[in-house]
Image 1 (cartoon, rainbow, N blue to C red):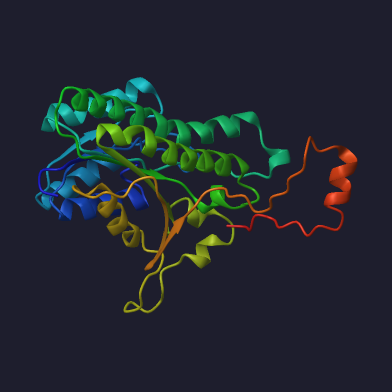
Image 2: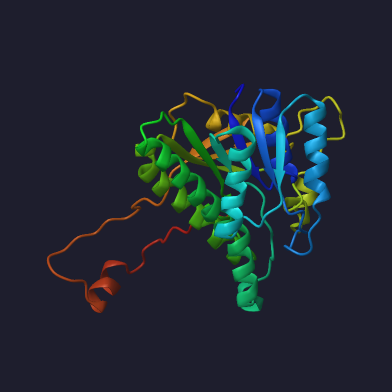
Amino acid sequence: MDGRVIAVTGAAGGLGRAYVLELAAHGARLVLNDLGVGRSGEGGDPSVIADLADEVRAGGAEVVTNADDISTPEGARRLLDTGIKAFGQVHALINSGGMLRDRMFVSMDVEDLDAVVAGHLRAHFCPTRAFAGYWRERAKAGEPVDAAVVMTTSNAGLFSQPGQSNYAAAKAAIAGLTVTLADELERYGARVNAVSPAARTRMTTAVPGMAEMVAAPDDPDAFDVFDPANVAGVVAWLVAPGESVTGQVVFVRGGELKVLRGWRYADERGREGRWELDDLRREFAGHDWERTPRA
């Protein structure tokens, strides 16, 4: 990826940091964004992104940083402009990072919904909109475009995860956004895919019962299934030049990779005319309803 310019949001987190180190090792030039907020979106510490940039530069990579709030159109545009000003162009965007405000639904406030939607869905939408507009302008000007976007969804949004209805709604929306944008942006030379990572991060270790599940093995020679670096190679592949994969949602856990598909018709019935209440009662009397499994 020598010369390829890649922007990474949430770059200082567990997954984002793993992506940055992987991409730097392959010669990419990097535009790093992170606000350094807490797990619930509180506070902010710009030193986290500065420290990561220093580490990557020490390894010989070209890096610039940005600390704008990319859940706003203005902040997202400034992220794009940071890359263009430093390197002349930007080839890929990795939307990482996020936040949690877990509660059972009946205890959840609308502020918990708004904060998580902003921290995930808006934080994906706004930078992707800015970068997609930039690639469209280049494509319409007749320039060759080989661009890529990686979104971050979650099995919590693709399956069922009680206690995370706000997070699940945002992550399900990101999966829907991914497959739609893959169709829309293909004409401009941009691919769009999503990863659903299972890894040891600040968010997963804070979920009750998850910290033990994703803990590193005691044996230093054993394969660490939940090491965020396991996801980094897949993300690097999705933003690498010359690839063709687009419109895919990929689950990654350790060496396990599964390509997911969206909603499908699981049961089909037909009749002449509309269904009435009594018709439906008779049709489905004693029917064994299959539920969406938990994540």
